[in-house]
Length: 133
Image 1 (cartoon, rainbow, N blue to C red):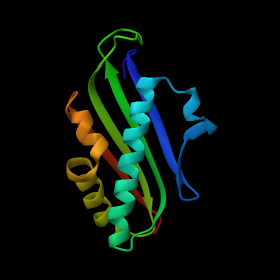
Image 2 (cartoon, rainbow, N blue to C red; image 1 turned 90 degrees about the vertical axis):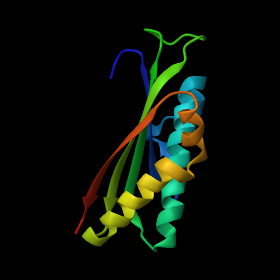
Image 3 (cartoon, rainbow, N blue to C red; image 1 turned 45 degrees about the vertical axis):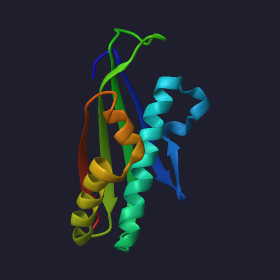
Image 4 (cartoon, rainbow, N blue to C red; image 1 turned 135 degrees about the horizontal axis):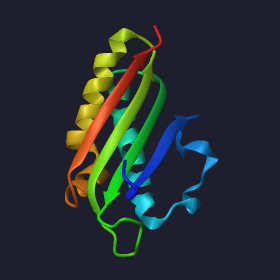
């Protein structure tokens, strides 16, 4: 990632998405809050899709990156591209396919914040799934 990239990571803990490292959203600048919203929306969408298949995850961590059009953060900076990275730990190998489908569907169809980001700039995603079986 470049110097002009903002990044926010949330993790599912005790049924809620929280910023990693004990940070608070009060510590984020407004542009980073957009990334936080995208990560949380994508996470809740994935969890909702997996609930339909009775798939429970061990851990879900989502990082949203946004590359700015300026070398440093400024009021006039805008995002020129986004990346959402999903890091998932599931209980068994059988859940991996359901997780892949849920992430793809959340990213491409069901997450409203990701859909809004697409109106600003391209949105890519990547996924890493580990089975604890």
